[in-house]
Image (cartoon, rainbow, N blue to C red; front, side):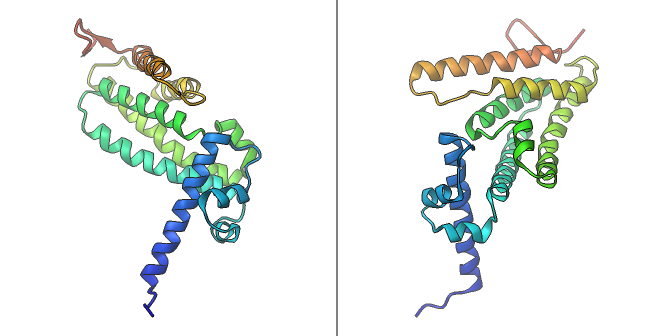
Length: 213
Protein backbone atom coordinates (compact mmCIF):
# COMPACT_ATOMS: atom_id res chain seq x y z
CA UNK A 1 0.00 0.00 0.00
CA UNK A 2 1.49 3.39 -0.99
CA UNK A 3 2.51 5.57 1.89
CA UNK A 4 0.58 8.83 2.28
CA UNK A 5 2.99 11.61 3.16
CA UNK A 6 2.31 14.98 4.74
CA UNK A 7 3.21 16.62 1.44
CA UNK A 8 0.59 14.49 -0.32
CA UNK A 9 -2.04 15.42 2.25
CA UNK A 10 -1.15 19.10 1.94
CA UNK A 11 -1.46 18.90 -1.84
CA UNK A 12 -4.85 17.22 -1.55
CA UNK A 13 -6.09 19.87 0.87
CA UNK A 14 -4.84 22.64 -1.42
CA UNK A 15 -6.56 20.99 -4.40
CA UNK A 16 -9.84 20.69 -2.49
CA UNK A 17 -9.72 24.34 -1.43
CA UNK A 18 -8.96 25.38 -5.00
CA UNK A 19 -11.92 23.36 -6.33
CA UNK A 20 -14.23 24.90 -3.73
CA UNK A 21 -13.09 28.46 -4.48
CA UNK A 22 -13.33 27.88 -8.23
CA UNK A 23 -16.83 26.45 -7.88
CA UNK A 24 -17.88 29.36 -5.70
CA UNK A 25 -16.58 31.85 -8.26
CA UNK A 26 -18.37 30.11 -11.12
CA UNK A 27 -21.65 30.11 -9.19
CA UNK A 28 -21.23 33.78 -8.33
CA UNK A 29 -20.79 34.49 -12.02
CA UNK A 30 -23.80 32.46 -13.17
CA UNK A 31 -26.25 32.87 -10.28
CA UNK A 32 -25.05 35.69 -8.04
CA UNK A 33 -24.70 35.65 -4.26
CA UNK A 34 -28.36 35.81 -3.06
CA UNK A 35 -29.66 32.33 -2.30
CA UNK A 36 -26.30 30.62 -2.82
CA UNK A 37 -25.66 27.87 -0.25
CA UNK A 38 -22.72 25.77 0.89
CA UNK A 39 -24.55 22.74 -0.51
CA UNK A 40 -24.67 24.39 -3.95
CA UNK A 41 -20.93 25.04 -3.79
CA UNK A 42 -20.12 21.49 -2.66
CA UNK A 43 -22.23 19.97 -5.42
CA UNK A 44 -20.66 22.20 -8.07
CA UNK A 45 -17.16 21.45 -6.78
CA UNK A 46 -17.81 17.71 -6.78
CA UNK A 47 -17.01 17.33 -3.08
CA UNK A 48 -19.03 16.51 -0.01
CA UNK A 49 -20.62 19.33 1.95
CA UNK A 50 -18.57 18.27 4.98
CA UNK A 51 -15.40 18.88 2.97
CA UNK A 52 -16.46 22.48 2.36
CA UNK A 53 -17.16 23.00 6.06
CA UNK A 54 -13.73 21.59 6.88
CA UNK A 55 -12.23 24.73 5.35
CA UNK A 56 -14.95 27.37 5.62
CA UNK A 57 -17.36 27.58 8.54
CA UNK A 58 -20.00 29.56 6.65
CA UNK A 59 -20.72 31.54 3.51
CA UNK A 60 -19.05 34.63 4.95
CA UNK A 61 -15.73 32.84 5.38
CA UNK A 62 -16.05 31.39 1.89
CA UNK A 63 -16.87 34.76 0.36
CA UNK A 64 -13.96 36.53 2.02
CA UNK A 65 -11.54 33.71 1.13
CA UNK A 66 -12.62 33.88 -2.51
CA UNK A 67 -12.40 37.67 -2.64
CA UNK A 68 -8.94 37.74 -1.04
CA UNK A 69 -7.65 34.95 -3.27
CA UNK A 70 -8.89 36.61 -6.43
CA UNK A 71 -7.61 40.03 -5.41
CA UNK A 72 -4.16 38.67 -4.56
CA UNK A 73 -3.84 36.86 -7.88
CA UNK A 74 -5.14 39.89 -9.76
CA UNK A 75 -2.64 42.17 -8.04
CA UNK A 76 0.27 39.88 -8.88
CA UNK A 77 -0.66 39.64 -12.55
CA UNK A 78 -1.35 43.37 -12.78
CA UNK A 79 1.97 44.38 -11.22
CA UNK A 80 3.82 42.11 -13.64
CA UNK A 81 2.03 43.62 -16.64
CA UNK A 82 2.53 47.19 -15.44
CA UNK A 83 6.26 46.61 -14.99
CA UNK A 84 6.56 46.04 -18.75
CA UNK A 85 5.30 49.58 -19.55
CA UNK A 86 7.31 52.77 -19.13
CA UNK A 87 4.84 55.57 -19.88
CA UNK A 88 2.53 56.30 -16.92
CA UNK A 89 -0.41 57.17 -19.19
CA UNK A 90 -0.09 53.77 -20.87
CA UNK A 91 0.14 52.18 -17.42
CA UNK A 92 -3.06 53.99 -16.44
CA UNK A 93 -4.76 52.56 -19.53
CA UNK A 94 -3.64 49.05 -18.61
CA UNK A 95 -4.84 49.50 -15.02
CA UNK A 96 -8.27 50.70 -16.16
CA UNK A 97 -8.69 47.89 -18.68
CA UNK A 98 -7.58 45.21 -16.24
CA UNK A 99 -9.84 46.49 -13.48
CA UNK A 100 -12.97 46.70 -15.64
CA UNK A 101 -12.36 43.24 -17.10
CA UNK A 102 -11.75 41.78 -13.65
CA UNK A 103 -14.81 43.41 -12.11
CA UNK A 104 -16.92 42.12 -15.01
CA UNK A 105 -15.52 38.60 -14.71
CA UNK A 106 -15.76 38.12 -10.95
CA UNK A 107 -19.20 39.62 -10.32
CA UNK A 108 -18.47 40.20 -6.67
CA UNK A 109 -21.02 42.40 -4.91
CA UNK A 110 -20.02 46.08 -4.86
CA UNK A 111 -18.52 47.56 -1.71
CA UNK A 112 -21.73 48.61 0.08
CA UNK A 113 -23.33 45.22 -0.60
CA UNK A 114 -20.24 43.42 0.68
CA UNK A 115 -20.37 45.50 3.85
CA UNK A 116 -23.98 44.39 4.36
CA UNK A 117 -23.17 40.65 4.22
CA UNK A 118 -19.79 40.62 5.97
CA UNK A 119 -18.89 41.20 9.59
CA UNK A 120 -16.92 44.40 10.28
CA UNK A 121 -13.73 42.37 10.82
CA UNK A 122 -14.06 40.47 7.54
CA UNK A 123 -14.93 43.61 5.61
CA UNK A 124 -11.90 45.38 7.06
CA UNK A 125 -9.69 42.48 5.96
CA UNK A 126 -11.02 42.77 2.42
CA UNK A 127 -10.68 46.55 2.50
CA UNK A 128 -6.97 46.16 3.30
CA UNK A 129 -6.47 44.16 0.11
CA UNK A 130 -8.56 46.55 -1.98
CA UNK A 131 -6.50 49.36 -0.47
CA UNK A 132 -3.44 47.87 -2.19
CA UNK A 133 -5.15 48.45 -5.53
CA UNK A 134 -5.86 52.04 -4.55
CA UNK A 135 -2.19 52.59 -3.64
CA UNK A 136 -1.12 51.06 -6.94
CA UNK A 137 -3.34 53.46 -8.87
CA UNK A 138 -2.08 56.40 -6.82
CA UNK A 139 1.51 55.44 -7.65
CA UNK A 140 0.65 55.46 -11.37
CA UNK A 141 -0.94 58.89 -11.06
CA UNK A 142 2.02 60.28 -9.10
CA UNK A 143 4.42 58.94 -11.74
CA UNK A 144 2.35 60.65 -14.43
CA UNK A 145 2.47 63.96 -12.58
CA UNK A 146 6.21 63.70 -11.88
CA UNK A 147 6.94 62.90 -15.53
CA UNK A 148 4.84 65.81 -16.80
CA UNK A 149 2.10 63.73 -18.42
CA UNK A 150 -0.60 64.58 -15.87
CA UNK A 151 -1.36 67.88 -14.11
CA UNK A 152 -0.84 68.22 -10.35
CA UNK A 153 -3.89 67.14 -8.37
CA UNK A 154 -5.07 65.39 -5.21
CA UNK A 155 -4.17 61.84 -6.24
CA UNK A 156 -6.18 60.28 -3.42
CA UNK A 157 -9.37 61.98 -4.50
CA UNK A 158 -8.68 61.29 -8.18
CA UNK A 159 -8.07 57.59 -7.47
CA UNK A 160 -11.43 57.36 -5.66
CA UNK A 161 -13.20 59.00 -8.59
CA UNK A 162 -11.53 56.63 -11.05
CA UNK A 163 -12.48 53.55 -9.04
CA UNK A 164 -16.08 54.76 -8.90
CA UNK A 165 -16.07 55.09 -12.68
CA UNK A 166 -14.62 51.61 -13.12
CA UNK A 167 -17.23 50.00 -10.87
CA UNK A 168 -20.07 51.57 -12.84
CA UNK A 169 -18.43 50.64 -16.16
CA UNK A 170 -18.08 46.92 -15.44
CA UNK A 171 -20.24 44.80 -17.75
CA UNK A 172 -23.31 43.13 -16.23
CA UNK A 173 -24.18 39.79 -17.76
CA UNK A 174 -22.38 37.69 -20.34
CA UNK A 175 -21.66 38.63 -23.94
CA UNK A 176 -23.03 35.79 -26.05
CA UNK A 177 -22.06 36.71 -29.61
CA UNK A 178 -19.51 38.60 -31.64
CA UNK A 179 -21.60 41.78 -31.85
CA UNK A 180 -21.96 41.95 -28.07
CA UNK A 181 -18.25 41.31 -27.59
CA UNK A 182 -17.44 44.09 -30.04
CA UNK A 183 -19.80 46.44 -28.19
CA UNK A 184 -18.19 45.61 -24.84
CA UNK A 185 -14.73 46.19 -26.29
CA UNK A 186 -15.80 49.56 -27.70
CA UNK A 187 -17.23 50.58 -24.34
CA UNK A 188 -14.02 49.50 -22.64
CA UNK A 189 -11.89 51.54 -25.07
CA UNK A 190 -14.12 54.56 -24.41
CA UNK A 191 -13.82 54.06 -20.64
CA UNK A 192 -10.02 53.89 -20.85
CA UNK A 193 -9.81 57.13 -22.84
CA UNK A 194 -12.42 58.82 -20.62
CA UNK A 195 -10.35 58.08 -17.51
CA UNK A 196 -7.11 59.15 -19.16
CA UNK A 197 -8.58 62.47 -20.30
CA UNK A 198 -10.31 62.95 -16.96
CA UNK A 199 -6.95 62.57 -15.24
CA UNK A 200 -5.61 65.32 -17.49
CA UNK A 201 -3.67 63.28 -20.06
CA UNK A 202 -3.17 64.67 -23.54
CA UNK A 203 -2.25 62.93 -26.80
CA UNK A 204 -0.42 63.83 -29.99
CA UNK A 205 -1.81 63.44 -33.50
CA UNK A 206 -0.76 59.79 -33.53
CA UNK A 207 -2.63 59.06 -30.30
CA UNK A 208 0.50 58.76 -28.17
CA UNK A 209 0.68 60.33 -24.69
CA UNK A 210 2.17 63.82 -24.81
CA UNK A 211 3.81 65.79 -22.05
CA UNK A 212 1.87 68.82 -20.91
CA UNK A 213 3.16 72.22 -21.99
